[in-house]
Image (cartoon, rainbow, N blue to C red):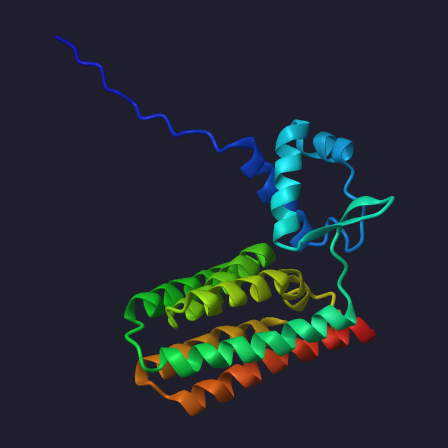
Length: 230
């Protein structure tokens, strides 16, 4: 007597999610340039997806401030300006310092393990020269760092700031800045600083952790300034 083996079907991802993830990745990787008009019909052709899922994706991206609406132009990729970049770095420092003040007095074991896993993903992405993978893993590291505070308002604020930083992170990890230079030491520095941040959290070292964060953000900011003035 033969028995049939049931195979579990993996549910398909909703088309709106597929559209969102594809458009987002193209914005982060600057395939869709800052200030570029995103025509619905063109997106339908690019992605092979219908109008309704595209519209749903654009609404979600608008809520995350990755795109914006302008009179007579429709939806465009949110521009990268000196003012919003300056504001982003100011907010990043304030919010992440706030996380330090709260997190060093809490048991962060669960989120520290997730930070370690994210940092390992960064190293793997470096080894395979996967720039988008580096961006996503770095974002995950800092979101789990924010989670150490267990403060929903700080977590939400850092998520917004770090989402804004994704395109800048892609630029920072790309040879487009200081073209021709070996970025190996920079990638290594990012991973090492993350490791040191984890140790500081484990040892409840407030001052040292804030010093590390200051250096970490400063290095990132300096690379973006170099890009903007070049």
